[in-house]
Length: 453
Ligand code: SF4
Image 1: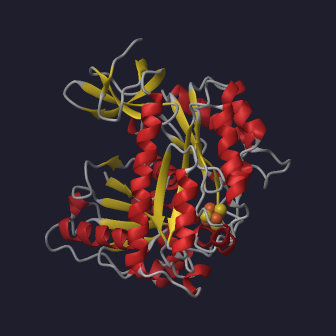
Image 2: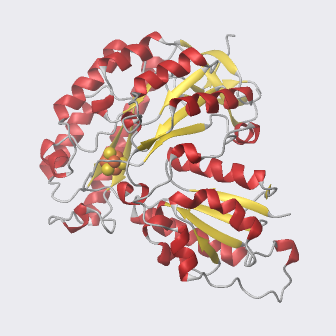
């Protein structure tokens, strides 16, 4: 029996991909190993958003091969799609599989003639055969012909998945039709495509039947959901159907472009208690000049109006943003504009990313590349601001009663939990995960909340 371990890098969408790989390996009779050092097969689901993400994947492969030389390593995900030969050249990598062929991983693992389970390997077993070039090109085809999301197996989600994660992610959209100048994603995930609404509803029924209390709906460009389907469907209509046709207790939405968050959608979240009051809107810069250079299609004032509308309509909502520092041509004035803009917005958290000139992206070749030490300093300033924003939001919520879902994290006398508005907290006592509790929100993440029901 083959044992496997999956190491996942990157965003929520890759988490959903890793769940699907895990499921298909289980379905073919493979067993999850405790760690990558004890597995016959290690699948690395890579990310390539920054140079650091690439380096992390390469370092993991080298470490796994050092500690577990008999393991067959499969590299997949966005880095594998972007630069398959780079990964294929690393010691221990048996196969490189593109994003469109992840469904083939289980049969590779179980049927491939070259594959020898760890239990059958002796000290004298020869190293895995090198990857055949024609084999690799079959597994990493150009992303121009991506798989359709409905091609996933019927029983994609099951109790194993729920058992492995308290809040499973359901990826209902993949790919992106935009061409932001800093982003490598369209090159490795192809054009936007959506899962049929009936498939989404079926998946949610299965996850709920397996015990899921909260599901995170995710996509690369989630706001674009359904525009490729015939007939066209909107994200709003999909969310309405999920609420009306399933018994799901809590639906959370991952990142949505600000322009796709409509007044109607905000009102739906305000009315419907089963939708987590949580909005994540990528900002990227507070300088219009930089937004234009990035090919972002809104300006700072539009973004601010959207955030203010959310805050007025759903006063306790979590509102999060992403920001990129050091885009080519970003001056000290642009950076100050971003900092002041964010300081004035009622955001509850902020993710700060440093610009990374990925091969193939437009911004890699733009003049005015910002020196690394300047990027580092600007990122540090914004992270300090991010911390202040999170603290202010937490304090503004202190003393409110709210419902939380328990998580896996625990200490001697507390259990980790998360609220609808994305506050992580500790609740008093030892509780099983996936349990709803009523609590009074404490002053910060590390204070212990009392349970009221
Ligand atoms: S919207 Fe822009 S940043 Fe987001 S995935 Fe598409 S190209 Fe990348």
